[in-house]
Image 1 (tube, helix red, strand yellow):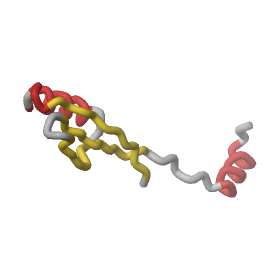
Image 2: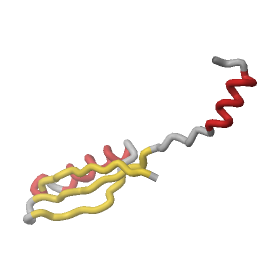
Image 3: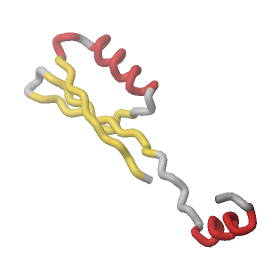
Image 4: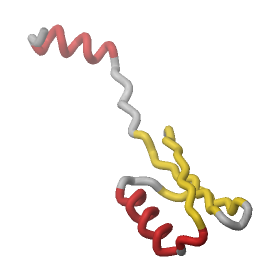
Length: 73
């Protein structure tokens, strides 16, 4: 399983509504909060992650047989 990571910085003075709306938007795209850190009491850094879909491994022998018997080029 692989993960994609990013972060978002929020100003505390803008209030929780801005943070919640932004995180909900990220959540709709599959992001989830992995941690938060307060910086100097003025900013909150939110670290986000989401799964990256990995392609299924290709069975070379099966592909070769399919090509031979399936008639596809």
